Amino acid sequence: MLAAVLVISALSALFGMILGYSAIRFRVESDPVVETIDNMLPQTQCGQCGFAGCRPYAAAIAEGKADINLCPPGGSGLLTALSDLLGRDTKNVEGQVREKTLARIDENQCIGCTLCVQACPVDAIVGAAKQLHTVIEAQCTGCELCLMPCPVDCIQMVPIAQDLTTWKWPFPMDTAANRLCLVDLARPAATDSGAGYAR
Picture 1 (cartoon, rainbow, N blue to C red):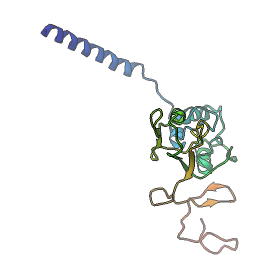
Picture 2 (picture 1 turned 120 degrees about the vertical axis):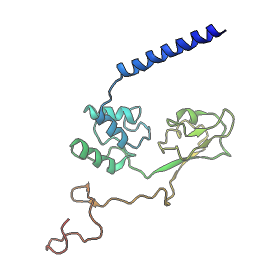
Picture 3 (picture 1 turned 180 degrees about the horizontal axis):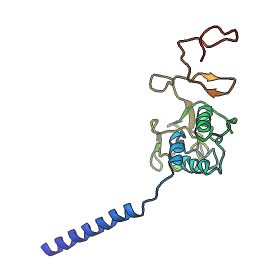
């Protein structure tokens, strides 16, 4: 019995060392530009850009195979940030930029078909077959991919209520250049006559 335990322990240690060495020796270095772009994307995994998710879209942007204006959930703020990072010209965002929403399931109409569970790319919908389903609001990205599969139209997209946890300070916009302009709001902007403070 002791011999078997020692043999198993020795094999476990050997395989552990082999796996550890392989992880170091054959590690694939990821592109830091792809990582940066992926961290800037909204991570909705909605596919509106034409790619399977945010990571493939980030890789395509870094390789120059995709334009930077294909992400409607990111809006103009993301477009400006990507433009500044990559040195590309800004364009209008492709698609419709909408306010942030969450999926809500009407539990009185839900038949428990699990089609929405299968469609959700971030596993924000929970429920078993022929049981009521519900949305985990903290995980829902508002991608709307659960709407089409629902056979009884019991899923509604509702706007996120503005409170202290969801409200964000809107950046001042330089409307002439259509770029973010981080100005000091305490001082007045310069006028054509030269009065006031310069930016």
